[in-house]
Amino acid sequence: MRILVVDDSTTMRRIISNSLRAVGYEDIVEAGDGQQALETLEGVSMMLTDWNMPNMDGLTLVKTVRANPALAGMPIIMVTSEGARDEVMEALAAGVNDYIVKPFTKDVLAEKVKGMLK
Ligand SMILES: [Mg+2]
Image 1 (tube, rainbow, N blue to C red):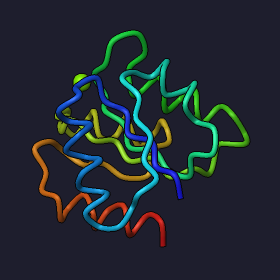
Image 2: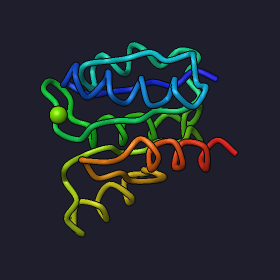
Image 3: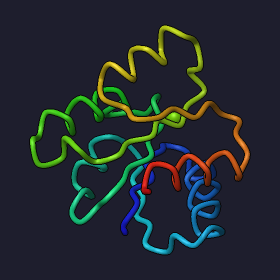
């Protein structure tokens, strides 16, 4: 069960990865932007992505992934500080399955990931 964590902040990637490891997910890969994420998708079962990133942002990444029929069903959670209603609606319309607004607790993250992988 490989999980891809995408965020341009190394600190945020570490927080998310550590939270996942704490609840038993060991196979975690990371990417610093959407472009890198697309090159890291091999074998990935689920993706958590930031919205604001250089090169390719999270929304474009989600749209690109969803445009690939082989990846259309992969669970995607957006983890972002863009918590306004319009942004949430836009992300869901693009194919995000769930949404976590920063700052978040480890428990909220673990719960959403577990729920998604059930
Ligand atoms: Mg960012």
